[in-house]
Each structure stands twice: as structure tokens, then as C-alpha cells.
Length: 339
Image (cartoon, rainbow, N blue to C red):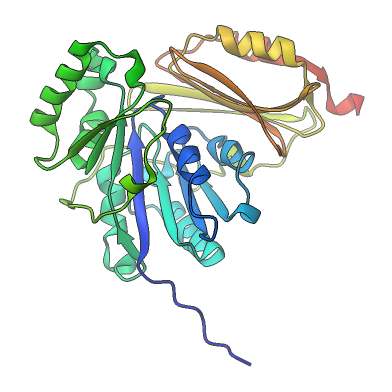
């Protein structure tokens, strides 16, 4: 009997970063669709809110049978490099997946320099091989001080080996010029610029060593590590859990619903499509099937899912309407007590 543990070494690792709503999850889904069939890929996803949606969105389209393994770190915890949640999730993911490649998606409001510090630390020196960091941007946002004066946005530009100008089909010539100027001021001198639509990026862009420039830094934010996140709680009698989070100038609100709760598809679609917020991600069990939703200020998409264990939604904006819960609950057609 061989008790020798399999050693995981030099796993090619990419950080896929970018601000809220720029298309990181869409890009990762495109990469997964185009990965070599014989390879096992792992995805570590961080989210600003406590509910955790991205893992469900990806898992609803890519499964372990297809060689894709996913772990979530909800609640913004991954942006603290010293935080235990990311280390635990990463170690468990590597052990389970034994991947040929690892993709890490930090929250759009996270601190990527601190993640780089952890990935290049002595602990992961032999386990991971850090390859290109890709930062997705929407060049149109460079006209908005909410982005250009945001520390995290500029940090994402500064660490990028490759800047991916996503949603390029919506740009004017002046947007491209402004992005080139901004990269000159805030980006690496050798950073590459490419253009993409709907997160469709050549898989070859992942290959190549990262030109790492990591200095010790400490962010001025804290997380209550003693508190259990909403994604970990058991459902109460009402069948749903609500969670709120705030930081970096934004607030989030999210809900988890028991699998026994079903939503009216048409009412839900109308509710989500009318939301005017920075970010919406959701997975829902409806009377018409299982669906995933992804919305920004200028795009709304609905996709059919192969699996969905429970309904979840996360909404992020600088301010949120207090009527959201009432409007969302009105879309329910089957409750726990009805089942």
C-alpha cells in the first residue's frame, strides 16, 4: 500500500481581476469552455457580499465531470492576505482538484496586491507558478471619478501584466485614447493591452510568467472573522436568509432561499431587468426552470443552468432601495409552508 502523498507543484496560476461589472466571470466561463479537454482546472472565487453567487453561476455551466473545480470565499475575506479563509479554501481546492491550472477571481472591490503577496509567499513558493495577471477594464469608466479616484481600481491597473479592454464594441475612439494614456500613467511599463467583447479572450493570454512587483502593503479594512457568513447558515422557518455588507464606498444586499421556494419566472425577470444598480448576480429556481442572471448598468443577461441547489441573489450599489426585499419576495409562488 502506497501512503505517499501526491505532491502538487508549480501549478500555473492566473489572477483575473477588474472592477465591479467589468465581465470577470464571463471571461472565466469563456476560458473554461476553451480549456483542453484532458486538463483539470480550478477556480477560486471571492465575492464582496456574504451570499456567494459566482460559484453557483460557474457550477451551473461547468462541472467536476468536465474537469472544473470551484471554491468560493464570500464576504470579501480574500482581500486580506493574512486572512485564514482564503488559505483554507485555496489549500482544499488544490488538494481536491490537483489542477493543471488555477484561476483566481478576486472581488471587484478587493485588494489584488495583497493577494499577490500571499501567492508569492514562501508557503506557496513551490506549489504555485504565478503566470500573467489579467485586469479587465471598461474604458468608458475612465470618464468617471468613482473609478479613477478609487484606490482599488488603480491598484488593479498597476499590477496587470495584461489589460483587457472588455466591452470594446461599445467604445468610441476617445475611450481607447484615454485608456492608453491612463495605462501610461498607472500601469506597468511592459503591460500589454488587448481588446475583447463579452469576456471572449484567447486562452493563450493566460500563458507566460508574471512580471511581479509586490511590496508589503496593508489595507485599512477589517472583517469580523468570528462571525459565520450567510452562505454558511442553516435556513430559518421562513426559508430565506438576508445579508448586508459595506466597504470601499459600496453596499451590498443579498438573499439565499431554500430549494423549496420557487419563483415566478416572468415576474422575477421583470424585477431584475428593471434594477438600476452597479451589479446584480443571481441564480434562481423558477417555474420555467433554473436560470442565472448577470447584470451591470448597461447589460442584462439570462442563462439556463444545468443545476442550481438553491436560489441566491446579490445586489451591489453605492446606495440601495429599501423596497428591494418586498419586490423580490413578491415574485415567490411556492413557499416552504406550501411544500
